[in-house]
Structure formats: C-alpha cells, structure tokens
Amino acid sequence: MVRRVPHLKLQDLVTKIFVGAGCSEQEASEVSEHLVDSNLVGHDSHGVIRVATYVNWLEKKMVFANREPKVVLDEGALAILDGRLGLGQVIAARATDLAIEKATKHGIGVVGLRNSGHIGRVGAWAHRVARAGKVAVCFVNTTGFGLLTAPHGGTDRRISANPFAVGVPNPGGVDFIFDISTSTIAEGKIRVAFHRGEKVPDGCILDGEGKPTNDPEKFYADPGSILPFGGHKGYGMALAVDILAGALIGASCSRPGVPQLEQGMLIIVVDPERAQSREVFAEEVARFLEFVKASPKASPDTEILAPGDIEERNRSQRIADGIELDDKTWAELLATCESVGIDKDAAMRTIESQAPAP
Ligand SMILES: NC(=O)c1ccc[n+]([C@@H]2O[C@H](COP(=O)([O-])OP(=O)(O)OC[C@H]3O[C@@H](n4cnc5c(N)ncnc54)[C@H](O)[C@@H]3O)[C@@H](O)[C@H]2O)c1
Image (cartoon, rainbow, N blue to C red; front, side, top):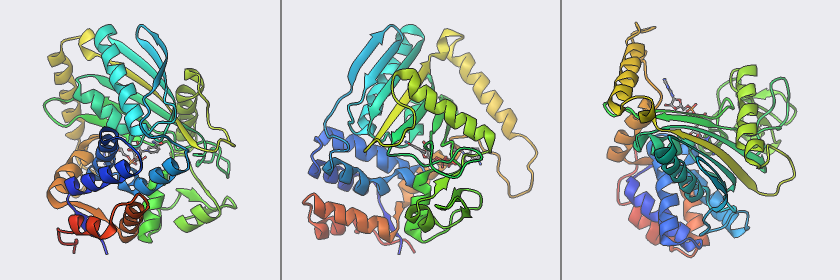
C-alpha cells in the first residue's frame, strides 16, 4: 500500500526523529526540510527514505549531530571548509551561504567543502543560489564508503555517483536547475525501486559478476555497480567531478577503505550583475529557454521542458496532494521513531490523519 502524507506533517515527524537522535531543533528542522523538499520535487531517492540511514550513521558515529564547519582557509573569493562529518544538509547550507556572500562581495565565490556528511540533493544548493539571484555550479564527490560506479569499460565499484548541478535564476519563470548524478541512475533510485519491488531500466546496473541486470536485489546482495551515463562522456565527467570536489580542495578522491561516507563539494557562485544588469541577464535567459522550448515536438505527446520544470511541477502537485510513501519506507520511519524513543502509534495517528492514496 502507498500512503499519501501531507508534507508539513511529514516534516514535523522527521524533525522530531532527528531531535530524538540528538540534533538541536534548528538542525533537525533544517535536515528535515531538505529531505521533505526532495520528496516534494520528486526526488524520493534523496527524501525521507534516507532518515533511517542517517539516524543509523549518527548512532554509529559515522556522522555527528550539531557540528558547524570549520574554516580552513578564507582568502578573498576563496574559502575551504572542513565539514567535520556534520550532517551534510546543514554543512552544505553553510558552504553555499558563504559562497553567495563571497560572490556578493567579489563577484565570484569559490568554496571547497571537505569531509561533510551526505549532502543530499545537490540541486537544493544550486537552487538556494538561484533564489539569491546568482548562478551556481556545484560538484560533489564521495570518499570510500560511497563507492558505487564502475569506470567506462570496467565492472566493479571505483568511483561514486559524483553529481553536479547548475542553478540559474529565471525570475519571470521557473529557475533553471540542472541537477544530475554522473551515474546512469542515482543509487537512491535503485533503493526506491528495491523498496517498491520494481526493476530498474536496462543499461543502468551490473551484478557482482559484472553482468548487466535489472534487479536491484542483485545490486545490493552481490554487490554490483552502476554504470556511468553516456559511456566515456559521463565517465569522464565523473572523474572530473571527483578531482574538482576532492583533490583540488585538499580532500580525497574516491578511495576504498574509508569506514564512513565523506562528501566533498566545490561550489562556484557567480554574480551575473557584474557582467550586465540583472534585467538584461534575466531577459536573455528567458528568451533562450523560450526559443529552445519552441522547437517542433517530436510527437504530439512529447513535452519540451527545461531542467527544473519537472521539479516545480512536482512541488505544486505534492504540496496539494501529499507525498506518497511506500510500505517499506513507512515501516522504516516507524522503526526509526521507536529507536529514538518516539511512540510509534502516536506518530502513526498524527501522520495518517489523511486517507491513504488509492
Ligand atoms: N549527494 C549525493 O551524493 C548524490 C549522488 C547522486 C545523486 N544525487 C541527487 O540525486 C538526484 C537525482 O539524480 P539523477 O541523476 O537521478 O537525476 P535525474 O536523472 O532525475 O535528472 C534530474 C535533472 O534532469 C532534469 N530533467 C528531467 N527530465 C527532463 C526533461 N524531460 N527535460 C529537461 N530536463 C529534465 C531535471 O529537471 C533535473 O535537473 C539529484 O537531485 C542529485 O543531486 C545526490
């Protein structure tokens, strides 16, 4: 059965869970808001499905509550932060805000973030910048624990999903948010399929013997690996992301033997107003997107979209209709409630006051 849950109730429950797990109210609500927002925009892979894992990592001291990043370097437009294995949703927000602040002052802000907990949906950080009227490019890598992706031509896990995102403000329409992993499919989406008992599309994953499979169970049991998108192109991009978010900022690229998931992010924020007025930039972006979308459609049922459009459409729909949760994710949330001392029945009563989805 799939439940449909109002997003604010879900956010409230997830906040309580993180408070129960030792986070301050402020931290818990920041993490919760990020996770529920990922569900709202349609990226369930980076939504509340992560709660059980994050709480488990807190318990195992693979990540730590209530940590702020430490400034390693602050020199003009450039800063390096050490995330000290704090919760990535909070640590990445601080890195993003610092890059925005630097771009306001210098025209450009470049912040390297090392040693952070999982920073979640990267598009959220690109969008935070676009909402501040600036342009963002974000590169994110993972060290050790997060090895997932095979090299082009290879058959086992050597790199991670290495996402990157670009955010551009589009004040007259929907902000341009291009936000992808360089693997054919984000690991979280394999997990979502696994929870729902579904297969993943052809050409995405290999089993533990390096053979193509559609079965998420084989990916987790063997374990298998994910293929980079677009053959050598996505593979090259994955390596570039790893070097930019790892070695360049004095952190590590993908490497085995690290006992916890550590993420690095290089975020570059540029103030478009340094090159022209805000209005001229906005007009050109809007004109360009409109021109591209006016292409004759490949078939009557095709829609030409810009990156970011689907997410905003999902957000409106899910705010109105609620967020769908499958049985396994719901059961995990309830088990996590119990593990942090929240009465499971009370949590269920609060959240199930809206009818299940048909
Ligand atoms: N923190 C991490 O380590 C990590 C790792 C991997 C992925 N992620 C996150 O997982 C999420 C999912 O990644 P993914 O690779 O599965 O993304 P995806 O394949 O769903 O692609 C999403 C992007 O494509 C755009 N898009 C989708 N359909 C479109 C269309 N028809 N026309 C134009 N644009 C379209 C979306 O607007 C969005 O920008 C992302 O938010 C990413 O940041 C995070």
